[in-house]
Length: 460
Image (cartoon, rainbow, N blue to C red; front, side, top):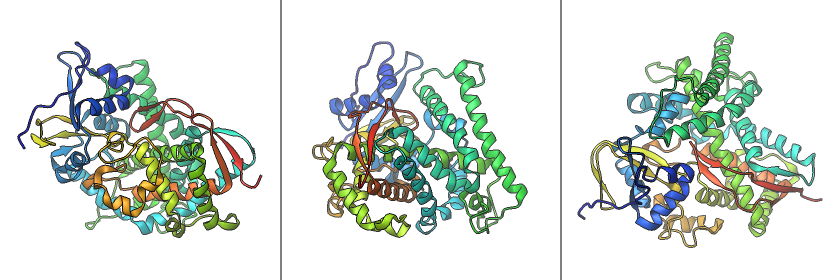
């Protein structure tokens, strides 16, 4: 097929689609696909600072960008640069030799066998949340706040072990500040130097310092105490920080203190905001769909009788809850878009993408592609039966990215989400109070309003 120039929304005369992207990025993506097809060119910013963004919405295009031509699409765009500046050059943002070295050191800590050992920490935090909810029967909660704190406490417990309390409050307050800072700079055509003493800059840098200090303090204390990673789990050596500190490559290479901090910050970011989003919307969707909630409750109550905590072995016994979660991540992927920058000119979907172009694939849009999803806005967990999954294009659903840079924590996220949902749905009936939730995009999918549900303890 001969490559062609691609159309896109005209936008405003002086600033193109800049305001649309800043006000409603997700709606802009959906409108671009609806009006212009699977590959769209969007211009944003005033003359002289105007950027071009090439949006790719088809599963075939997403596979090309993330997998088959992954070497030609790098994490060199503005958003990754801003994340790198705020959170360090951890596994999410590193490239080339840095990335390969980090991946070699970190990969063994995220095998299925290793991740399954984190089920006890997941169970501890889920039991604490369920007990707190049960102490106030009939209460209404904001799932956004509740699930954010739960997911943060869980990943902090897995990372830091006994030092969990020290980290949670700092991260809970600092991450939203940095998320907004990265988002605003990413969508701005003019990015003033971070060191300029503007109010937003000062606030973001204070949040960054607080994060660095709490992580550096825990890491330094571990080094002083001489924890080697060979402990029994009670002293912290078997938590993820201890394992990271003990990790060695084939030639004895290891992560230094700065690299440890950068990995910890990326794991905190990717390990709690994404899972919190999935849990928030899974419970909210079930709160709006009592029939599907009844099926999920029956499965969870049947497997986890007598109030026992789930183990990693129970994951395979929760296929309907797994389908609920996958359908939730179809409708509300925690990473609604994924950016790359083209090294060399190439053709995607018959459209010429120039060298140096900023390219965006959008799970939020592809997961609603009418050629691959019938009635795409409808909540239907049975889209993810094994037979129906096998019949779909591999990249019709890709909430964890794909290709060589696919999320290393996919099994951890699925395990945490499914096991915790099983306990909460076994113990509580959930009814949605807020029917619709306004959304936006930062580093991850953002809630722009409450997600309230009422909770009724089962058996009452």
